[in-house]
Image (cartoon, rainbow, N blue to C red; front, side):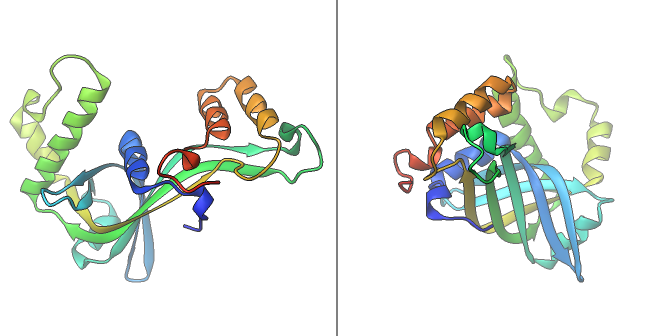
Length: 213
């Protein structure tokens, strides 16, 4: 990902963004072909504090053949985005642009065995359940064992290790017309654009621990 210092988040903020989304597009390369798959992901730490990503795809997905090769892969996690016409800056004397938020997580693929795949799925489900619904979180034990066994046989798990995280939050930093742009975004009424309006006024890249814009 191409980025600049004033578009970049510090590592803790990138991790928070990825965990809040828990969904991205995994891209791998195998035998001269590029494979991509949208999928849920779980960014975690080992007991030694090493970051890794756990995930899985359908066994029928051709991408699964790339996991055992030990190659490199990238997960792209996207936040809100929008086209910005010149008029939203309060002038026609500006080039239209695009606002967006993205984090890329790159690393080395590592194939997971069935036991680790199941454990990773259980950890992900537990975290998302606790964040989404009240009461005791749902578990795999709540469906008949033969059904969970069929489900687990039909997927292939992986981990992404030796991670490098890169971010690009293009939010009109170092440009004029911020108030007009935020007002236009806020007036649209859509949730994603309202989120962008707030970030334009207070970019996460300028908060404590982030590079100054």
